[in-house]
Length: 505
Image: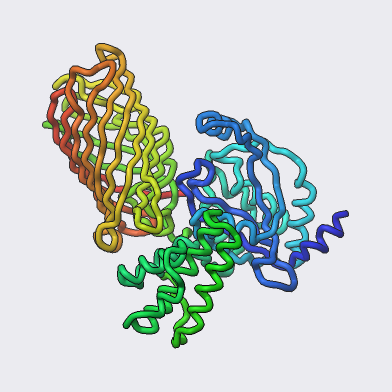
């Protein structure tokens, strides 16, 4: 039986594949890694993918899904499936880039990997989202192929993020080179950027069947523009059939018409490829320590912070998902020397924000969610801890080349013994801009206003305006500065912070 399976797979070489993060799925927001086993003959798309994943219950809601995933409530299994299915799932449908790290394993080592896989294939193991997850479990297979790499020993930490395991493979010298497979969404956005507005909208109309493909050949536009218009229409049609937004017969007819028109354009120019972004392993490590100080009102403080994972808008964006802020157990302590007070300034158990620009082709929702404990002012002289759960939804739009503006409607529930009513339900909104001002210089400007609707309603609105900036000094080092003005319970304060950040793990 084993020989038959090994013969079918015919594994001669292997790659580790990293699919970039997909922030709209809790299980995929940090990205995903799996192995590709390449046969003796054929293209990479005909290879097999080796995956490890939790067997989840489709009926579990977001809270149940999260709790079970964190506490080992799901069983994890290895599986083998055609690689082109993973490409279709990630690159074509979920808008996720894929990075293929070629491993320098010999055919004999690949065979050892597969034999170990077959031993484990039907064995269930407790699956934990933070550590014993898809990324960590793949390392057992690589350790079976090359024991001296000791990859699982390198993960001596309480959590494992998919990109961390890929970095461990690189550090162990197992990877020779990396190949980038851009998502269809990235190809579409790039093709769209090369066209003037009328030509881009014509491509959309052709893909949606509102205009005949031959219409792109009319007019005074040059051959290059006509070719790009039809190339964009073809990409859009392929995207819509992959998303099941078009019937198959309708797609065949429309796609054939686009290709027929394309052959009539007198140009040898090939469809333009999007520029290659920085690979994920070029990004900053996922954990961060901070040390610095500042002032709040008229009093100074010293601040120390820790964030086990993962990324925010002031971190250098190389290697991370555009528009995604994800912070897990991110906190900071402050010492106020003048009053000799030690305060937990904030502890974000989970903080997620997705700012994804909309256009006529894509219309994603921008959103945020936060579960935290933080210190808030209650009088001019007293503060206290508040437990906060909130979220928001809205939209974003690109402003210029590297800036994105957003607006979100928000709701927030806060609980504290310092409230007269013990709790407050507030409604309001926020708006802001994120931008890469220059290489290595990130800016995040945000204004926020919420009003009490239930519970503690007589304290007036919470208003804030903050400017956060980050400057990358090196891959593992950055300087951060924040300046804010806020009003809470009628108390006005300004605040400034300057920290030195060290990324690790």
